[in-house]
Image (cartoon, rainbow, N blue to C red):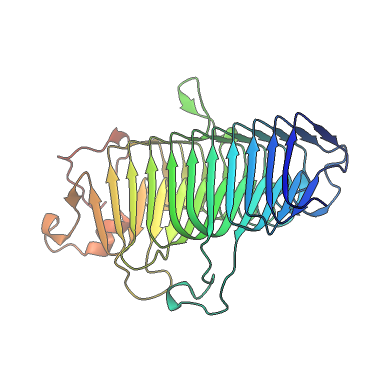
Length: 350
C-alpha cells in the first residue's frame, strides 16, 4: 500500500499485481495492467484501488482483463478528483458496478436532503474522462464501463464505448447523484457499412439506459456532438434519465441516434414523474438526427413524461395539438423518426 504523493510511469503489472493507495495524490502514466486470471476477485479496482485520495490521475495506460467486485480496472472510493485520459479499457468486469471504472465521492454528512432521499448528499468528487476507449466491459450491477455516484461535475469527452453491458442500469455509463454531467464528442456503439451494428452496441439487460443512465443530476445534463448506434435496453435504448432535482435542465444537441431499441423510448426516455409529484425539469432537444430507432411498445425515438419540453425552441404543449391530452403527445412523441428534427416540424400522436 502506498501513501503520500506517488507517480508510476512506464510499468507493467501482470497477474494479481496492481496499485493500492490510501490517501495523498496518485498519478499513473504509460502503464499496462493485465490479469492472467480475469476471474480472480479483488475487492475493487484490481488495476488501481485508490482510497481516500485527494487526486487520482491516469494517462495513456492500458487495462485488460480485470475483474473485481467494483471497478474491474479502477476503483476510486472517497476521492476528491479523478482524471483519466488517453487510456484503453478492454474485457474488464465486475460482480457489482462499474465494469472498468467505479468512482464514489466523499460522504461529508449523514443528513439526507429530501430531493435526494434515495442516494444521499455528498457531491465533492470532480471527474474528467477524456479520449478513452472502453470495449467489452461487463457489470453485474450498473455501469457496464463506468459507474459514478455522489459526484460533483462529471465531464466525459472524446471517448468511445463499444459492446459494454450491465445486468442493471447503464449499459456503458451510470451516473447517480451528481451536480452536473456533460458528455461531448463521444460515441456509444458502432456504425459500420452504413448501418448501426447492434452486436457492438451497449446493452442494459432488462433495465434502463442502453448507453447512459443518469439519475438525480442536480444541475444540467448536457449531451452534445455525440453518436448513439445500436444500443438497447428495456427503457431508453440509448439514454434514460429520471428524478432530476427541481429546476434542473437536460440539453441534448447536435447528436445522432441510429438503430437504438427499447420497449419504451427507442432512443431517449426521460421520466420526471417516476418518483411521484411533478418536477420542473426542462428537456430541450436541438439539431439532432433520429433514424431507425425502435420501441416495441411506445415512443420510437423519444418517450417523455415530465413538465416542460422543447424541440429546437418549440414548446410542445396543447397549444399545438388542440384538445389532445398532453401526456399522450409526450408518450407518442415522434411517429416517424427517420429524419432530422427541424424548427418547422409539427408533431402529432399516432
